[in-house]
Image 1: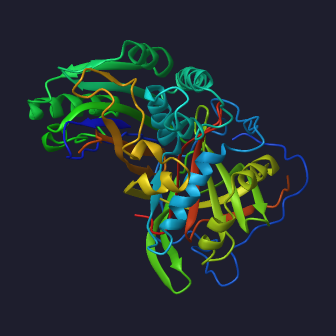
Image 2 (image 1 turned 90 degrees about the horizontal axis):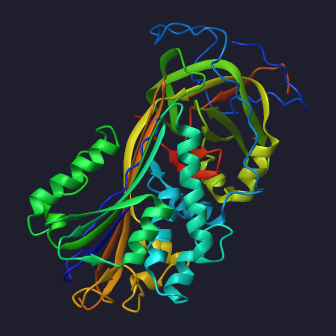
Image 3 (image 1 turned 90 degrees about the vertical axis):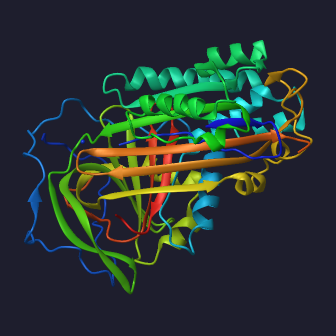
Length: 451
């Protein structure tokens, strides 16, 4: 996430990056799960016979895992409401265009939390920003929430080195940041500050891009351009990089039909395996939900509508409480998983969406962000002009890579059954990636066209 403060009426944006990328016999407990088959009217992507062209992508795995996968949903009865309100608003907005979508709700929440640290005490700006944080009622609670969350990310993901969250405030060298904000950024958000000569825009852009590239293992090389730097005085940057290996990797691939609509299909590359996974068939959402765990404390959840053209109906029913209820109802059953490979990028402005959700003051000339900078030239004279995010995802046999870039523009105001369940993802679907130790939604989106 980047917060930038503009010297004049020119706007600037800078992204935040994220990148994501798993036998032994199991005993099924609990109530039996009804067999879920391909919905009526949807042709099978493949038959029981292996079609010509099927490849074994990797050697067959040993019949054991390097760790035990026990899934217990995060202790909360629901996901945080803001993340799911944000996700639903974005997904519904892009339904008619049938776009692939991926966003990072956590990155948006984090940048808003950091902005709340710079806002005036008990101002409307601060109240609106804090309202986006789940079950948090004060600034101190916001700080502690992110301090504990970021520490948990490090602890739970250090074994597989799957998740890296970095924050850095880049400032023009004439800017002096408020000491309290500097200390807060370091202690609670694990953030650093680096002064650059923004007057030498090519050199400043190179330094920022090198930092982002190093954090993301080379996935993000052109985060900013000299043109986007030259009118800025400050960039508050948060980069999240995730690369996870499936706990149960896919070893077979083939080409098959993907039904974008009832009457339109395309050929895509599928991955397939039959194993024990946590699964639930939700009548309320009219969708199947499957958990695909990564090594470590992260999992992808895939929500597959019953009907070929059921993606819009699923989005309308997509509520945080319903999703959480489905997670609690999941049971470990044997599932034949057929999942397309997909790889795409996505970007959008969040200004209008956030305004619809009640975050308005930071975009107005009445915005209160006095804690961010010192000096007569910029102090008390800034507002957020936009919040942008660029994201992407790459799902393959080994795991998932996903990345997202959030930009905040700040400008001068004055200018259990033995039956094998079939989970055949051959139509548009919704997914989200959850850090299960904290319950945070790192990434979420929908797929209309796998690539």
